[in-house]
Length: 171
Image (cartoon, rainbow, N blue to C red; front, top):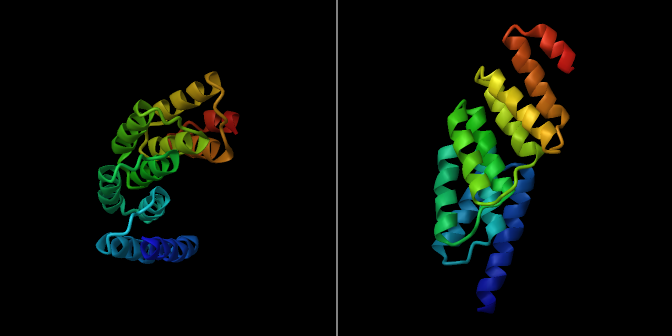
């Protein structure tokens, strides 16, 4: 038992270094090695892998790991959901991002300003500025902090929609 634990710690140390360097291939390779050797993959290791895959635009691969995570009874957290939402939004699958956003909320995980920013960014890039503005109103009404990235996405979306006066006012 002690050997397995030290093996897990070693894998996690190297995986964390790979994550810090943004080396998604290393994270995924180490994750698969851990699974093959029968080591318990801790929740934060799943998070490393899923977040890196989504950051690289490999959302489908991330979903496969996510489903393994769920089968291993590891609950998803805000960071994992936000990474998926952002990944979907970046690949122009805004409807997928919104479905995950709703799933996150149904599971009792409260979105934060980064999560809302990812949704708004995806909506604006998809030309759905009115929906994005609805999220701005929701955040204001519910005390959710709106950060500069959130506003930048809205300003960019309004500008691209030809609504320059509104973009300038929001700025």
